[in-house]
Length: 137
Image (cartoon, rainbow, N blue to C red; front, top):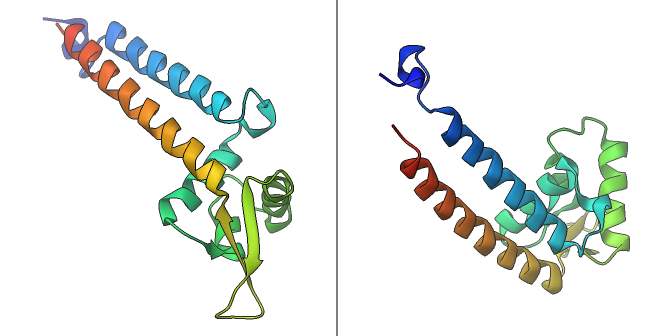
């Protein structure tokens, strides 16, 4: 019986390594989205940008601040958002429904980059799935 089954675990070390390979590939692809700029290689930017991408359109600025799960301070979250706005990754507009709030959305360039990133990530996931199956015992 494989070691993974004996101790109640589901996968063997080769399969777990494949998960690490997957995360390495996805991380490198994330860096490529920003042309190697490591400033955006953080969980805060991941949460912010994927959250806005997932929304599929403009979101209230205050809602975008709340998308950064690891950031509890609104002030700190605001710094991340303002960096993305200053770099043209996120666009800020007036909210036609509520003059007291602003909307933020991905720039069309960033939306396209993220679409490509997700295509590569799904390809990597499919490759890893096959490798996990091949490494099973």
